[in-house]
Length: 429
Ligand SMILES: *Cc1c(COP(=O)(O)O)cnc(C)c1O
Image (cartoon, rainbow, N blue to C red; front, side):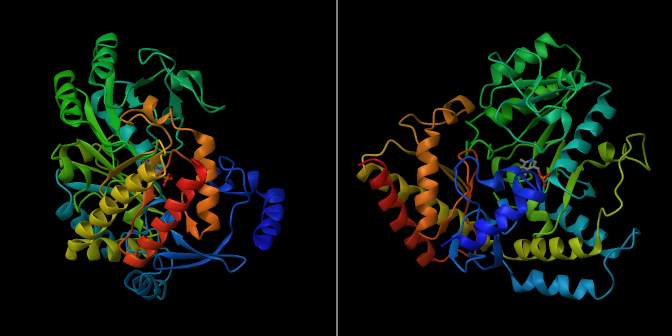
């Protein structure tokens, strides 16, 4: 049934490390052959063997309006007729920046880059450049792309200095990354106390969506704001997932907490490679050519990518019902999955914030990284494989989110739920 994918994966493994251009795609966590995708439309994707799936990966978030959306496609088609790249300013870059500033609270200026990784890397440089401090605080289990200083996890203690969790990250870089515990303000304050006047910024996923999905406890984000103000550090919301997803204005609007610097990616490109970092005029004018924080990009603000992003953001801005729709569908999906787990006698937690959903295979509620780590990964792998067999395409690893898009129909959700019920029952019989 997956013969073509098996053949393609064999070829791929000879020329691409692990057969892929991004590790999670290799399906190592679930131990089966990744499906090679040939096309996508609306809520569906098709693999090289012609199998059709209901897609809940949605390219890891960008496809909030579903695949092959005609509005975005037509904007791209129109843009490519005028050439693919100029390396010079265009009106579209101004249009999208103005629109973002209108949609998102607390941003007055925008710098476009080509990925979420680049947005975060540049935001950290800006925070360091502005504060004249080297250290940064991140949270264990939060993902911020693959730049050196972000590939650091905590030791057994949140107080420990950084130790890299990738080979090739210099110890000197890693030692400036301090790791705290998500939803634990005490662990944050402790790091500030131990490193007085040395911390440039705290960076956080307002909703942790790279450890499964774990939302902020009441007061957590507000507490980060207070601590950063008191300590003279900047607060960075990495909204590469939550931006333009939780609400038009992302997590800042959804939770009513202000960030100093906000990073975007994924949705902002409408499926094209785009990232951005944003903040007040005062902060952003530290960036070259205005200020002394250098950052540049040959293809940054690429006209075709901007056309795709602008079309998607415009649609979201003028159709607020998208947000009620995806949140409502995700809320019902989560409730139905909880009920399915209960009926199957399965100790499964279903976390959900906005359109983000994640099951954890544990009987304990999951409110932290250590909680997420209690999930039975073998159970997740089995769940993934059985759902795939039933035509449901989920993230091939526990520590990811299930994305509900505007394109998922009631019938898609109902079919998905039937599969969930069968699979939970099989897993826990
Ligand atoms: C995906 C992601 C990134 C990295 O974005 P890329 O475009 O993959 O470089 C950064 N931060 C968060 C929160 C993400 O989910």
